[in-house]
Length: 540
Image 1: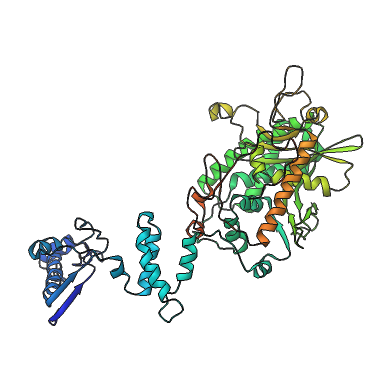
Image 2: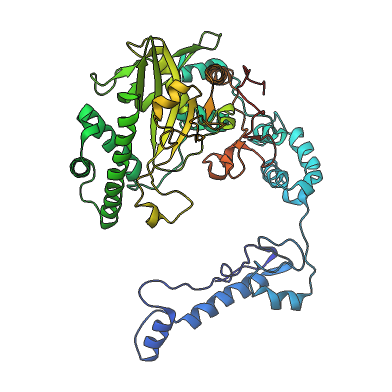
């Protein structure tokens, strides 16, 4: 390398491994392999030692080409002691030249509007250096509306002001949303968890890049499918099946499902399916015992709540409840219910919905108050309103049947031999309903326990009829408030935290929401005795 002499030379990027460059291994042979083969007479390109020497010569020439001025720089240097990122070749140079380290000022780094904007972005993330940004802002303000203006400065100003996220072009937003919303309970809960996350995922459909892989939820999907088809296909005869017949039924259904949906299963997949198969026999036996003693009997499986045509036009469905936001827009909650049970009695029809859960569950009204855990309640209220051929329907409860038989208080291996499954949810505090669900007051088939005289113990899992009505009114009010917020462009990043989890921890949109931990956050909580009296949605 030949360099002409010049008055001033700037040598940049003097970082370890970059300049002088450390020769890297390329191809099949390492440096040691090449040196060994050259020593034995093989004709190969240069050895490692010569490559290092050549890089050193280039470095020397770069430093000696200047007649008057020489600048040496490397990234990450913050003070005279910060040599960590610098090349080791600088150590003897600095020792010989005895030149003091010079840290460039903010003004020097921001020599152009574009550079000033870059530096301002860095300073905005460092609260202890906020004052250094004043001169940058003044300089950027001075070139605004000129050809030298920094692109993106207006956006940087909005970010620095930390204004709540909002859509101001609401007419354009309405074109995206349409005049009527159809949302699932899962999406409804997503909005309650964080409006900004909902907007990004379901309105803009901004999806993160994902690795393409096959990762089916075998446990949940297979369990739901077998339970649905076992009860629907067998009908009334299901209650009289022997244990051997239940085993044969499960084997047949699992074989049918895996043949159609899981061809070429791996060894691990086969193990998981076999484990699910063994558990399904016990779970169906528990459901069988429940139905034999219960006044509530299944009337619908995988019931679709939607007024749009589905893939199977003959599949059972009911229309969703339509709510209005008072501004010309409507919202409907759509979805699919695992199972609906009914108990006709006199002129009334008592209704409950049942959900099969392959994980844990702890139903709490404080979560309902915050807009979470509303799925089954919304389904129950919809069926009470729009269910077909019902006489004076009464919302009697939501039940979650936990399909894992292992209580947390004992080893799984020991618990696997027990035919007990946990039930959670909310039940109408009415003796007719409680005995209709649990005839002997055993506490096995409802989420409450009983005293020796058969009366239920006080529990948050019980609700009188007026309380259930208050819950229905409040939840539907939350749905309407969601619609109002969306159409008004209110998409604030206000995450809803609980004691162990913040949605920001796993959010795909954390990089763009500008939310700061500890600020503008809501927490899962509710007033004492919530829903005992009518509750109105608080203004946020």
